[in-house]
Length: 174
Image (cartoon, rainbow, N blue to C red; front, side):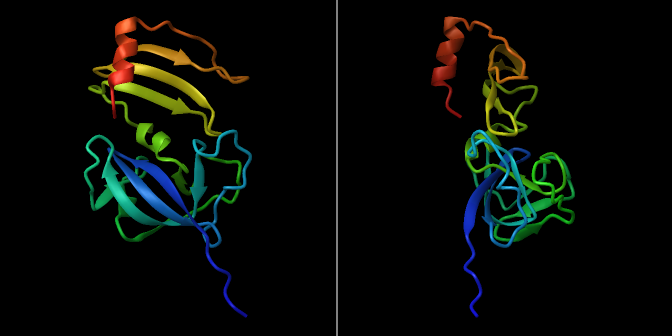
């Protein structure tokens, strides 16, 4: 009897000022990829272990050898190694619990925990099921104008953006 072939997918996560590119073996690693989401590319998922393919600075794209978790500073991602969650919560619909959190696309990982006192540029947020919830312009860490996107029980509101800030959004490349 032969061993079933593994199937891997890419995953991306925020780790401080870095984006960690992961390879997740969906046939071996416990994960919650079967949960019901609205946009899989922007939804947040969890797994029990993954291989660290690459680590890149969110702003410069410079490669790094290691990065520390956004939430557990003792958890280290090292390029070219496997990482394991000591605890993994088997409840698939629970997002903010034990496990290695990741997205299927790079964009939400890039914006996760990016705000700082000197951040200038476009900032975006998504709900944990992948629906967009906020797009805003920040200048020196302060929100200038934003557009809230409404989805059912989520906050609804819109702020008009001056023309010079619209141009800044279009020309800002990050």
